[in-house]
Image 1 (cartoon, rainbow, N blue to C red):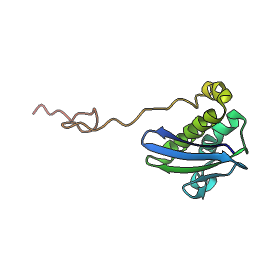
Image 2: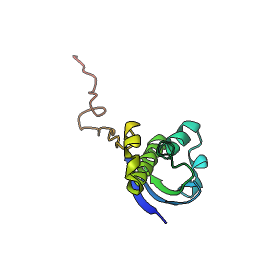
Image 3: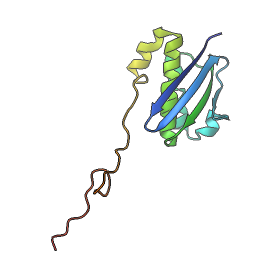
Image 4: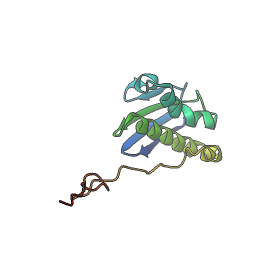
Length: 128
């Protein structure tokens, strides 16, 4: 039986997944993924890796995800599933890579600096 554990990240969201052979059930934080990610675009993001790899319905996925917003969490889950599928079958990597599912999107919100209103925005200048 093939089982693998990987993690995926996006912004401040971190997803840890446990992928095992099964019937295609995806559980996120104890709920079905369709309940946790209520909109169709987010559900598509979560299942995109298995569809591109041609592994839909072959694996059960248990996900623990924390941090960030709901879209960042969905993309973190997508990356973690893609990494796990590559670990099990390296032949699917080119297909996943061509769709951009293997690359970690490392863009994060820049921190606020002292003496500034936001990260780069300055306070309004007053001549008088």
